Length: 196
Length: 281
Ligand SMILES: C[S@@+](CC[C@H](N)C(=O)[O-])C[C@H]1O[C@@H](n2cnc3c(N)ncnc32)[C@H](O)[C@@H]1O
Image (cartoon, rainbow over all chains, first blue to last red):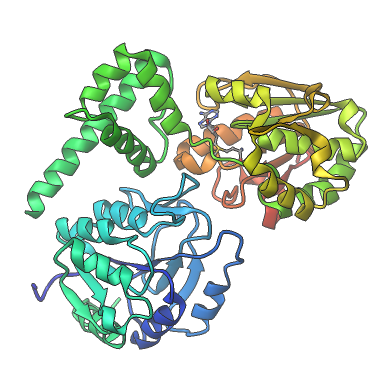
């Protein structure tokens, strides 16, 4: 991997067991982490988005629900709202839709990853965490195809292994690492980014 | 490898733009300012199902094969809807907006982008329960003629009634939901008395103009599919359809805040995206 490469966004997909995994990941990020995080966590349709509150309390990044037409900014983490797909436009703004479910999910990880891959091309990092289905595998492959960096939580360390496992079977991922090591790895990448 | 992907992406995007342009020139359906990522997903979905070799083949097909166009229009419409969707919205309508409407001698309501009509019948039921239906005229429009036909019929799969009933109850419904439809094995048909004051018609928010002055516009989960420029244009239509004090209801993830026309409204119930048009400054 080139030392000078700069990443402009990180997309994360998680499902069953995702809340704990996301907590660990966010905790591990260094102060002033300057790549925006965009997260799809599978969540039931009528849940108030309590996740935001919990993740915000970690205080590493400001966590909010993604609004339509909003542009992802450094220092922020965005969560897809329950019951909407989250897409990235070519101009790197968010779109929300209520199309039918994909992989039984809305929001779907594939939908976010596939559109983000086109918007950010090789400036994107994709991460698949714990989960009980195979959402995100196709999307992660697309990120890889466009030259982005792909990371999968080591299934051995996942609360539910099938989603990371499916991702690993679908494409050649760059990093398969234990949950605790993902944040330090991301930190090491941003250290190469000029301070904002 | 990366370069090939990028060139493919560029080519795909050109083909899709040409297809969208073709739909506009041939049929007047204008998707040019819809969310690009969304339109692309829908078109590629259809492409994958069609078994065609190139995306460009869909251009020919959409010009010469009307069945195919109907299909594509359906794909691009996203008609997903439900009765009393977002019960808290309907609760707010009932508690905060109905009292305002009650003071009017007659009420006109426009449901723009009503899909298969569930939203319209939800409104009709609420108006009935509030004793306001008799003095109300509802215009229910959508640009998709197939879906408007379904809306007019008001027949829904019986399997959905459980969900609708739960929504109805959560929204503060005052009666028994099953009193509003007749059921057989497969389907539930909404009562004709609910349809009496509703006019269903096709209307395209992008290409058609204002057709009536109304007290309340309900346009939910339509603007999210538009780019900002188009959103502004459509909100302008609503501004022109509403008198001062008129009310505009958007979907739960739709926001007036970034629109050029924001200053013409005051938030009435911000959380539910209910706005009221200001009196002349
Ligand atoms: C997701 S549905 C929303 C249905 C309902 N309002 C609700 O919130 O449940 C979106 C609807 O907008 C309609 N629509 C899309 N573009 C339109 C346009 N330019 N003019 C009128 N209706 C349009 C579609 O046909 C579809 O029925």
